[in-house]
Length: 450
Image (cartoon, rainbow, N blue to C red; front, side, top):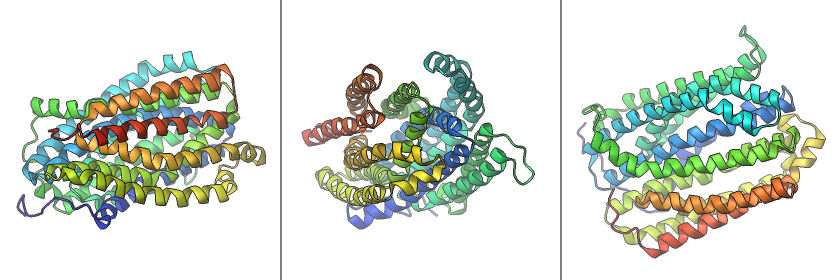
């Protein structure tokens, strides 16, 4: 197959949007089911384990979104090359992404082993919780290189309009993780009973399996040959510099965002294990019900970059509005479902009626935040697609400033109920949407080269 056998330029139709977004939705949905199942298993160990899962989960998410920042930067660059039909450049970009991913994975391991324990001891009041989290994270972090390399294939497949192949790796990872969670946490099928730390080992093995499967799929379908992935694997400092220039603002943006969420969880921990456990379930629900929104957001990034690469900048705003309409339609249906049957979702964690009663007011707040996210994150990812990722970082910094002030006063100074604390998400998405919308409307992104 020749390098130019396939035209990678996209249209802006609803059919094109859905053809990209639906496979991405499934690819995001499957790991969310995996993550929620993980928390359900840990919830059976007790409220303390569910609370610890909240702290460790958000910590690992900080590093996961660093990889996502690199992924989105690489995806925008690959999409731009695809829009220009320069397929011969895509393999070189991908190779540099792999090198950066491995370097970031090593850095994450070192930080977790030598710096994170000190930060957790200084932040949390419960010494037993600190020890549980540190032991877990020192195991769990070894899955990071697998995750980062795995995320690079996302950039490749989405950026070249081949998102349908995403599902194989995520499906393999999820089956492995759920099976190993059950066996290693509870000691089933001849496996040792490892309790909380069993979830860490299960996740590492599952991430490795998912990574191997997806690269096997890339080989089997001839994608590596089509995009010349292995034609030039040497390290190219200039190209690495371009990728870092594009991705670094996104990496800082996502890391700051999740670090602030970790700060939110630390403040909640001061309320006690029940409120922390409730907030952890809210994060699970946010992840599950936000699947379609994130899929549309990823689609926005790649389609905006591709369309600009074709020289069709005038079609960017109509494209964004079309994606927003699809995103908010789906999110409205999911929010209604969440509000009509909140007990159904909460009882899965096996924490009893008192837990469910305390969590329902929070779930109402979260459902509104999901609707706001379905608009705000689309416009923000449109900014990513334009290539001006420094604006993404600036938007995030301004948004986080207001968010942090809010949670500090609500949760630390006035110690108001956590449902009011979760209203910080309303503020977060409102500010983010406003700034991203104004930037796109300004037209200052036109002519940006990446």
